[in-house]
Image 1 (cartoon, rainbow, N blue to C red):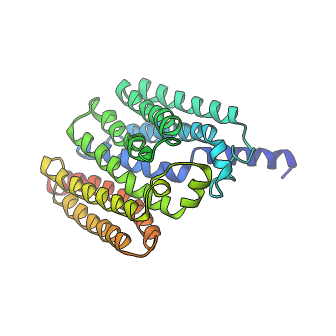
Image 2 (cartoon, rainbow, N blue to C red; image 1 turned 90 degrees about the vertical axis):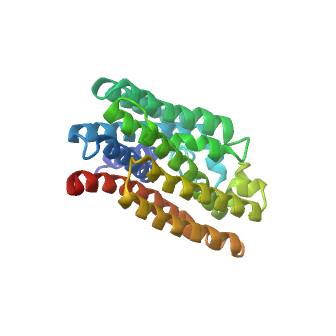
Image 3 (cartoon, helix red, strand yellow; image 1 turned 45 degrees about the vertical axis):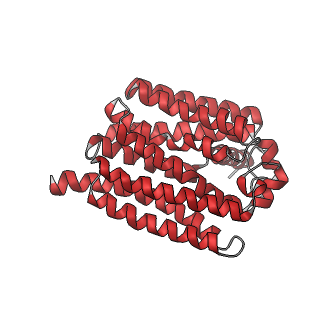
Length: 299
């Protein structure tokens, strides 16, 4: 491979890294769960492709804009100092332009081939993430991830709207589940990298509050999350497959949150963080599985 081709490959990898692919995969699972529930079965394959591609473009564009806006913070943190913009491999203007182009492409795809509501919702997720969370809250308040977490809760709304052209109560429940999941998930991670956040001057909850307060907040949000996820079955939108899954997953989440709260230091934070990732993916998998069982096995 020639030197120019090697350099081009590295640039390509850096721009892909701006989109944060591993994070997006979880967002797409929640969008797909919303689509299956809204359709009462498998949606049209072309619609799935359009939502997945557009969802990746929108979320990836938002992440690229986040890289550009937070380059100064990323440079101060060991965990993020080697990111493409923070390390100087990608110029900030390049990240901003890339993020804008990706979001424009996502909006056009959804508006032209799906519906305007899903396009507007996808764009709203980016606007919340960039302007409300990244620029407005992250540097100023420990409630940043609580309010800004709304951005990550938008994909189920997009999935539902793509199928129905509306936003109804089940979609709101899915949004609320992701919204309440975000604080305990993120604060568990923040406990692990508290020193990094403190060095960068970011007022994440573990930086500005005591360890005991942070762990109590994680437990409180976990309890409310599990209660909400179980109560979703009372709407009739999901059935016993989902309810059993939600209760089992919720019990695992609560167990880990209690163990963290009662343990010494941050023992259990890593386990809770990793479990929270599996929790959300499996819970939305249960939404889809419940719908498919009801449609194709019981219906």
